[in-house]
Image 1 (cartoon, helix red, strand yellow):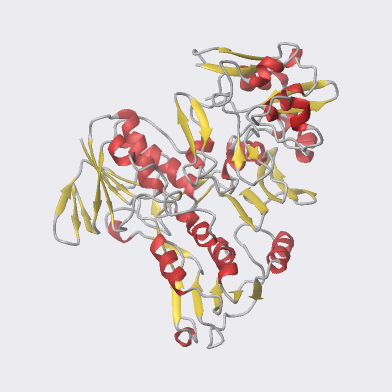
Image 2 (spheres, helix red, strand yellow):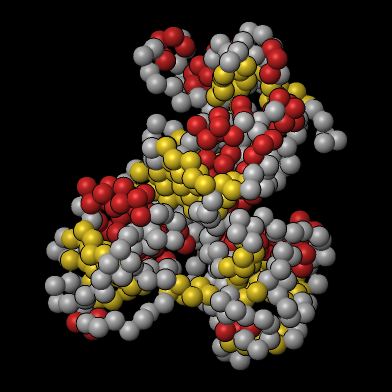
Length: 146
Length: 390
């Protein structure tokens, strides 16, 4: 299955992916207008230090600890994609406690969110991938052998 | 192959999912004495608080049993013997592999003055919560005995629905199992600011000042069914394959004790994620697969009135301290941590404990400050962000 992969050496640290991610699913047409002055809560987040930067989002683990640990059953895995049902999430943070990548985080309204590969919101390619100006984030089929 | 699973909570559900990964056709029967679809026990306080519903607190969807081709039998197992279990109505069920996921029951110690309070409850099951809910009323004064996770979540759940909630405990601090005194004081102050009263460091004094008392002093693993059949210490002793010492009998969840890799000691770690993982491991092995649950550690994520608390491992060794954060390390390993408030990316710390990551292989000073993948090598990141994690 296609997933999001990050090529660290090409990341510029521009954080456009964070903005495209936060914008995806807002239903607005203009990103600047939709996000102006807002504290954004993107599902993909940049780590940055001393000239090194890279984007981190859900790895959709085969043996996803977040899914197995979720106390409500809100996290599920279907056809290789880990998704969260925010109506069932109570914001207990057990998924935050177990995710080894720091890829599940709180929304502004207390429940959790994570990358769902833009399956709900766009045609084909996730917003971060489309928005990355340097090809540092790609959406492709990789390494079934691993 | 005939599988019988005693218990319809996280361990039992995990076992069903584990069995079905290996054996799509074997005959699975779950036996439970609770008259409900599988539900999440930790959500009962959220139910009383109005943060979830009877429907949303189902641990798995309505079609779970059908989708996994297993039977749900409401009844009580009274006896386990080789190859069969006996139910309270005298009927028997044959098994080739048995999972005991009987959970734990609240301890109800003799407490002076308890009889003077008209309404007395425990707080473990959905039925406990529904019974307590029926007694709630804005005029009621409630005494909760036990300042652990169960007692405090109960306090949060009912606070807005009663006149007053007082939490009493013999211990001088709240949450003694997961927090040190300093962190506990911080959380206690937060709970007090929301209106919860405390009577700590003294015996609880139930009296006619209270209309309702909730007993939340602790839980005891339900081990009776395997008494004389398998090794039992505090809980049913299982190995990393979730096998008991009795042939063809597995156990998982709150009724068991197992090795905590953070301390190396065998202990009861009554936590929902561990119950599921251990149950799944049992299920895979029951069906002839090969799974190991060898990375159990104590870990908790809990929140009160918006303040999150995330802890894991054990609190020994040198301490790194920052506001809302304590990390405990020794011998080049992270042993445990406590985070209060900002818990973002806590799983990166948890993973260091579970994987026993040598701290000299990462930028430990950096990760103390900020949990992140930045502290790992570029090669490690290439594997995790550019490859296929398992």
